[in-house]
Image (cartoon, rainbow, N blue to C red):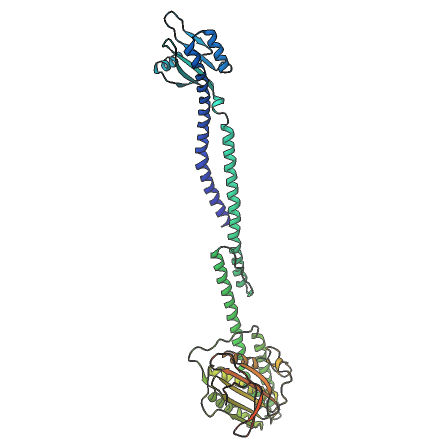
Length: 465
């Protein structure tokens, strides 16, 4: 593109220079010729007054000598009654041309060797017509024309060179953004997801750069979402794996039982590896569209029915409250079930057998709170537990479960908090905002439910009863 633009500018500038320089050069040549013959006419006009007064040869020779230099001027006086023809100076024009000029009575020019002559007729006192001949050399006709043409050629060449320089700079300004756009596309194609293009250059290339950067951001986001989806799906496998691991503990001793426990442990390690490998970017959970949502009470009852069977096997006391009536929240049913399984799975994984747990649902006008609490040892560093990818690893934690819950809550404008429960262990509070506004919080307090059980409710919404 750069050289094509240079070639176009060279061609256009050359045509413009030729279109103006050639006529201007011809005009200069014609002006030089007119200047030479104007000088010749002035010299001939200087002789006319003397011819009108006298035809004496000696006097006319002195006048001719004073009017011009050298032998450039000649005077031709025809013969009269009782007088002879007089020719003063060097004659270059032919007698025929002189006679023709005398007969026409007006000035004329004729070509002679080495240049041209101006023949100027002049009336004498006797009524005869004398002819003044002024020689104009060719060098005088072309005087200054070569220099003027050389100046024109230099100006034309300078214009062409200048147009090439301007076209080259303009081409660079256009080509460099295009090259950067091509390099960015090449880098993105090679998997360099951080490749971006500066938004500069002509308006069209700036728009192309904006579109490319937007596309690259979208590609990165899609890949991050794909990785996060793989991690989330893999994490959901941990729920049945937790059940299998706990059930294998009751198989007793024996080779088959030990092989089963080993296989479950290996499978669990493989799932953890998949989760850690897939979780390479932080995704953004999109808010559900209009009409999306589920009944939180129904999902809680369903998941507690699943986990209650395992709780009975481990002699765990459990309780669920606030699920007597429908509670609509703007999240997908499968996502809420996965979040509850992640929290309840953590209870079974990180607390000893016989540890009690509870799930409470609080329904307000603009928010719904789900509390998952246990009587375990609690979490010493809630902030680290909420941070993605900071699971200790020694206890089999991937650090993804709480993050799944957090993203689900934040997709509605809510959040997740970790605190201490009245059971003595950990309490995870999930705040689902119903109208998408920022949650309105109040301070921590403890109240007694109608069932007589103490329930910790910190940062409650104002609309809760």
